[in-house]
Image (cartoon, rainbow, N blue to C red; front, side):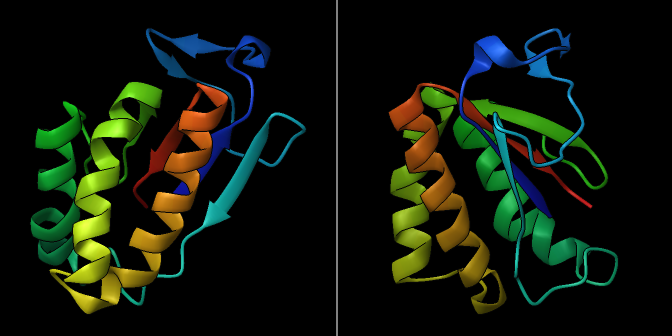
Amino acid sequence: MILSLYHDLSKVKKWYVNIPADDPVDTDNVTVLYTSEDCDMDEDWEAYEKCFFLPVDKLCNALLEMYEYDFLNAEQCKKLIPWLDEQIRHPNDKRFLPMYKELKDYALKAIEYNTGIGIECC
């Protein structure tokens, strides 16, 4: 999974509706993190679906799917933090614990910057 933290949305060059469409590469405006969960998206699709995609989609009104990209704005990140806190305390699948911690760090920064995070499910 690839997380992209946006530092300043006014610097985004391309948009697709309300989603930044810049390539997920490190720039002065975007910090990219390849998450460290111990799962293979192809092999562990059901775990991703049950433990991450569906809960986050429902909570944040997002559209996370395998091999897709979505953007969570600062307001969506605010909704995500309590769920991530609960998952860090009592993970629904321990393989996702590193990702939950990394995602929380990015979500907190996105709230601070009033921007958002891109999530590419690959």
